[in-house]
Image (cartoon, rainbow, N blue to C red; front, top):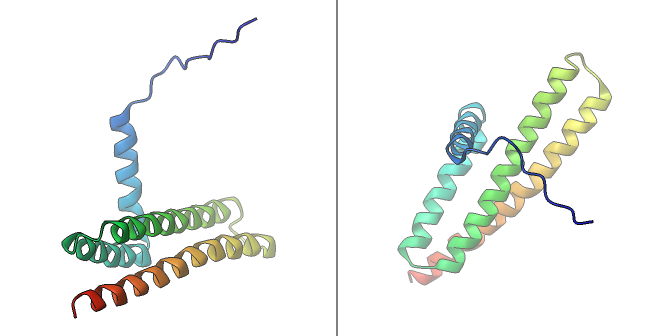
Length: 127
């Protein structure tokens, strides 16, 4: 007996996915000042790496920025879901929010260390 993969009767629309992505990014930037600042700092860092044609550094910053932004968005989403499900103070919800914030914090720490390292490295290139 051969199993055939089932196809969804409804095809996904890449334009709708792009629209949802852009809408989510805009919402993240508008609702969380730290995401907006992190995006600006990363964009400047990426432009500097592009200018100096430091492609490995460019990719490294792009990766750590992507991971950090995704973690920040997940953290915001988890907090919003928790607030929706339990609007009253609940210590269990507090623990969930703390765990989500810790995950985002780890990513922000790695992003920060990477950018500091890259900044110092670029400074040494310009001397």
